[in-house]
Image 1 (spheres, rainbow, N blue to C red):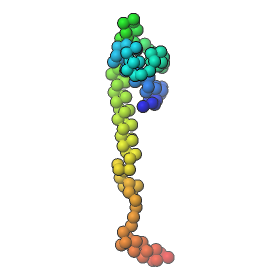
Image 2 (image 1 turned 60 degrees about the horizontal axis):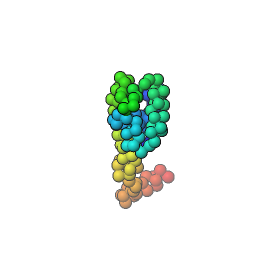
Image 3 (image 1 turned 180 degrees about the vertical axis):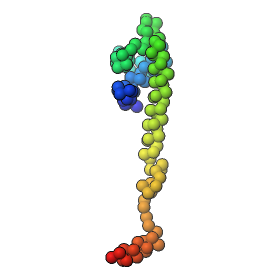
Image 4 (image 1 turned 90 degrees about the horizontal axis):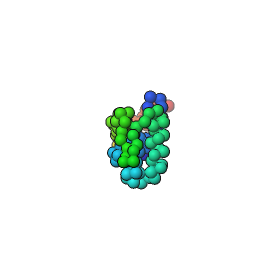
Length: 128
């Protein structure tokens, strides 16, 4: 899912956050890129953009991989929860859009019974 999360008035791409979480989980940009089926340079650019947006460094990068900074640890915890809620909201919204989940008069065709039609006709004649 693509999208923009609004955080304290600043936009954050959900894709960038997902990429960050993948690197954090893999401990390596290369392994995360392989798991995400994206190029490693594209993944690195997205995470660097996220770091610029947040004005902080999220990973200590070495030849052996990437480890989280204290700020990265916070984003791992908070970002995971935010994406989970975003995914739930999307799932619930899509489910609510299905006719089987609708309630009220919009949920099903509106038809009057013969008795209701007769009553409506009587009211129309009386008003008319």
